[in-house]
Image 1 (cartoon, rainbow, N blue to C red):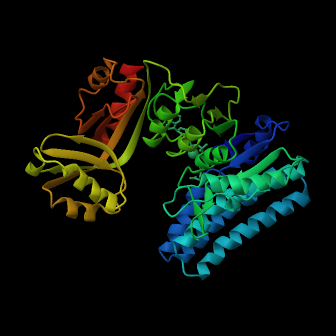
Image 2 (cartoon, rainbow, N blue to C red):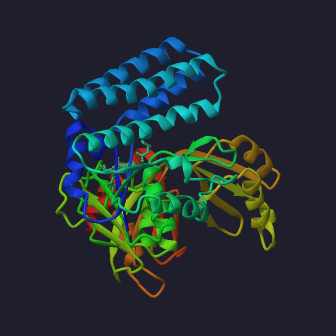
Image 3 (cartoon, rainbow, N blue to C red):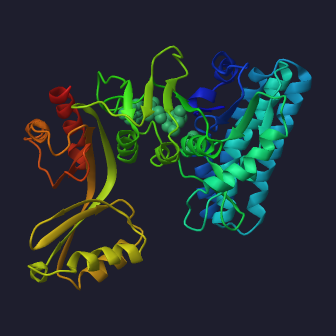
Length: 436
Ligand code: ADP
Ligand code: ASP
Ligand code: MG
C-alpha cells in the first residue's frame, strides 16, 4: 500500500483538488494525506496570535476573510446544489468553532485547535467532492491514530495499532484520505507536528503500515541542488540517500519537513518527491543508496545563534565539554554545529527560548560571546575521509566571504559553513556557480 501526500499548493484551488484524481490510481489501495489549502495555516496562525493578544475584533476580521475565501472555493469545487450545501455545512462548522474559541480562556490548547482546522477542512471538503463525483473513499481521522509522546516524539507503534483496524474495517475500499500535520499529544489534546508537518505524517503513516512507498507531491519536480527561491538555474536531483535528504531537510530545504525522512529510513521505505504540476517529471527518489563522489546539493538554515565559550580552564582539561553540553541538555536546546580549539569552543543553536539562562550558566566557565543572525550553509554529497579536494572547492568558492565556523568530517556527506545571514545569498550563488 502506498502513501501519497499532497501539499498546500497541490490542494490550493478547486481545480487543483479536482486534478488529484489524475495522479491517484483508483485501482490501488492507498492512503492520501492532505495538507491545508495553501495560505490557510498562515491565516490560522494569525488568528491564534490575535486571540493571544486579546484582540478579538482582529481575530473576528481574520476569520471573516478566511471564511469568504472558502465560500468562493466551494462554489467552484461543487457542481450540484446538494453537495454545495454539504460543503457549506463543513465550512460553517469549522468557522463557528474558530469564532467560539473567543468565549473561553485562550491557551496553547485552543491555539492548537485553531491550527488543526486547515487540514480538517481540506480533507472533509475533498471527501465530499469525491462523493459528489461518485468516487468511493474513506475519511480516516488522523486524531484517532497520530500520536506524540511527552517529548513530542511520534509513536510509530501507536500509529500501527490504531490505523490497522481502521483500514481493515473497509476491505472493499481503495482510497483512504487523512489529515497531515495534526495529531494528539500525551494528554490526548489536539496538537501538531510543526509547520510543514504533513510530510512527517506521510512518512510516519508509511512507517506505521510498512508501506511500499511514500510519495510527497508538491509544486516542484523534486529536491533541487540549491534553494530555487534564491538561486537561478537549480536542477532536480534524481537520487538521494536518506542521510543526504535528512541533512538537506534539516538544514533548510523547505521541500521536506526536517524530521520527515527518519521514519521512512528506519523502515527502509523509499520516498519519492514528485511534482503535481508536472506528474511525469522524474522527481527525486530517496533510498538507502548514495551516489559516490558527488556534491549533491546545498541548503541554508537561517535564525542561527553562535555561542563562543573561551576558557583557559579548557586547556588540557577533561570533562569541560561535558559540562558545557550539560547546560544545553538542561534547557532542552539542541546544538547544530560545533567547532573547538584548545582554549575555546564555538557552537550554534536555533532555539533561543532559554538563551539568557544558558548564557548565565556558561559564563561560569569563562568568557562567553554570542553572534545572532547567522546562517548555516550545508553542502551535502559523498565526501568521506578518504576523498580529497571537496573542502578546497567549497572554500575556494567562498573565499571572499567572512566565515564564522567551518564543520567538516562530522559525517561522510556534510560540510557546513556558518556565515552572517546578510551573506547567505552571495554564498549560495557563489557555491552554485563553482560547484555545479
Ligand atoms: P508543500 O506545500 O507541497 O509542502 P513546500 O512549500 O513546503 O510545499 O515545499 C516546496 C517548496 O520548497 C518549493 O516550492 C521550493 O520553493 C522550496 N524549496 C526550498 N529548497 C528547495 C530545494 N532544495 N529543492 C526543492 N524545493 C525547495
Ligand atoms: N498546513 C501545515 C503548514 O502549513 C502543514 C503542511 O502543510 O505540511 O505548516
Ligand atoms: Mg511543505
